[in-house]
Length: 73
Image (cartoon, rainbow, N blue to C red; front, side, top):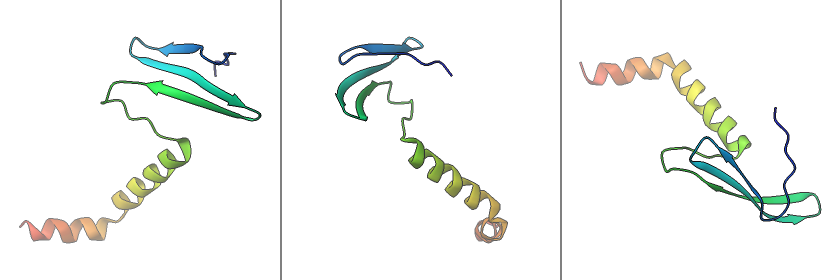
């Protein structure tokens, strides 16, 4: 993991097209802004984990997949 120090208004770049800017600092909370192309998904980590779990649950449910496939036979 790369750890960087940034002050309010300072930014960092990821690749050539993703910019992360520190917008505000209030005590323990930091507000950041992310500029990225529309095709780059950006999620809070807890939301990303929920999406991954839902996707895994959906793919693990082979009975539902078989029922869906039988509709198109």
